[in-house]
Image (cartoon, rainbow, N blue to C red):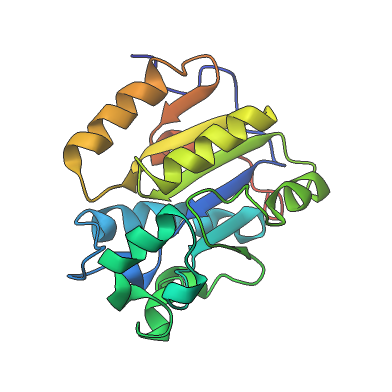
Length: 206
């Protein structure tokens, strides 16, 4: 499996997309990711390094079943207790350890797994003159995967920080690490937090 920053250092106009580090996925809830708190310190290091470069995504559940269409209706029938009309609003937000960096960090909301669908992420990245995207967060095999594949389709250099992503399924997480490093080896790099920090020149604090 190909690992490391094989295509050179990370330029100062890179953007860090931190995927769905929300209360919904922390702790003991039905959507909780057991490794959430273990990767949070590494994500914090990357956000702290350059908050201006960070974009947080937030997954916003449908408000109620009347807003859920297609296969999402079946999905929310199972998870009706986590719809916006029922869930604690604070759980939908980015966890406080990271939220305090926004602003200057940006927040992009989405109602599906992919942040590229129907939002302002492509425009935001174009405004920032971004060519390289560093990806952290969760889940490795769902929303992180959607973020990575969309970034590949747009032609960005994509770096997945392998010790700063997590899932509720260890097996699926491990499979995705292989997928990123093997099947997508010409379009996706996987690197550790330490490697990324050593390579990346912050845009505001050089």
